[in-house]
Image (cartoon, rainbow over all chains, first blue to last red; front, side, top):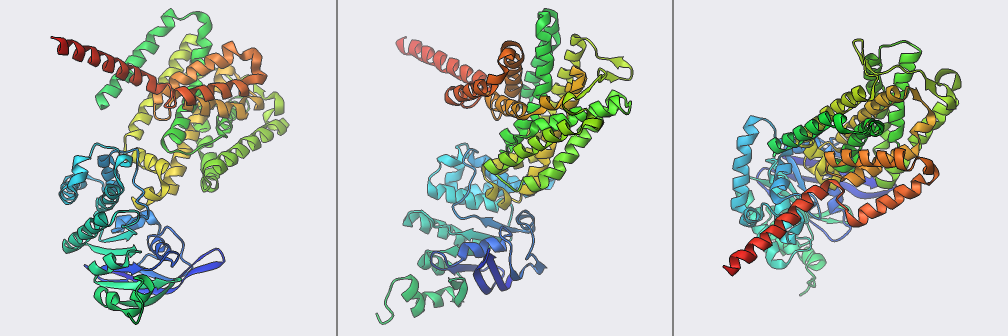
Length: 241
Length: 325
């Protein structure tokens, strides 16, 4: 579904992504894990067209999207939940969701809209309770749910999540990941970037480990979790333990 | 909601239609100028209040509208209506050309870039003597006329300007509540989020910039026919600031509030403070401070707030009485 070949990207003179290649297939959950500054967010932003790529090729559904603008990708079904959620704090929860459906227009979209919003309210009951409340008054976890729900309003084929666990309590992180898993069962393909290695790899079909802008490891979620090196680098366990 | 908005428009229109019957003669210029400046302020309200982009060079677009009208009517003998259309066109095209590079900047940088544009316009108009009269400007611009009917008295101009303004307010209200209106609000809160919603941020920013410049062009063209002359000094940075001030005083999200604020400020500027021209920056600054401290939502919010206050008061009295019985 998503194919990245030898992607490089620089901020000015400094190259931060070096020959990154990865792919996401239909109905997979793929996690990219890595520590601070390893280039995870940069990678996602380059896929979603928010940052210009220096070299390499990105294709989505067999269309070359390397230099496509962010807003056009949303119409193609590639939606991103940005890092730090970026909901609209002054708008109500409902209006935030409406904004998510911005790319859908026409009469058919109207009927579709009601269906999607009902589906999302079933998925996140708390959002239905708070639908008239302003986005900025929600708790962090609720805001993350709102951000995910808002991205889902555009009916994406591939959902990209940038650090869904950021700043959230462990229990809420667990809820969020459970929801991601549910959505995946419904047929949604997910690509996420995470620091919470354990939680994200546990639900992922496959994973990549990113270190200083290079992919250093790849494998199925379980494989990576069992991998000694991953344990050593990210989970803080000694190799010989 | 829609119905209510229309109702407000209707009430205001009725008010404006009968007001010439009661108003003292000397206030007509204020209403006419107020309407003209309101058109420009309305455009600024869309740009600043809804899309969150500032421009400190909007006087230049008013100037472009005024000069286009002046040149075409006095030197090429165009009918005023044609010159009016041309003025809107020219100011929009220039806004499009300069907006493309300028709108890549944000916040203070955008303010500075637009400020610079305004100064360039001033220097250009004041130095290009043979064509557009230099500092003296252009005089002898005819009154606004449609198919031979001339708007030459204050009452006629009053109806003309306010009709145009009313039309633009209704157009703006519809736009604000449309899909593009939502896009503008998204851009003003969070450009990153807006683009992940599938909104083409650059395109919409340019669109609103051009639209607000077109409003300014309309205002400029009307101003030229109203004053029957144009001068570079009429379109300097103090006019740009005046318009931004009107939007802040009126309330960022309230179109009629902005119109009301513009009329009041025009009255202050032209009637009360005209002999203190050199202190205008100081006075504007004080007004701005007072508004930001006491009515940060702008005068447009006052109506709603006093209504809310009354409702709370009455509610309390009612609860008190029903508790006693």
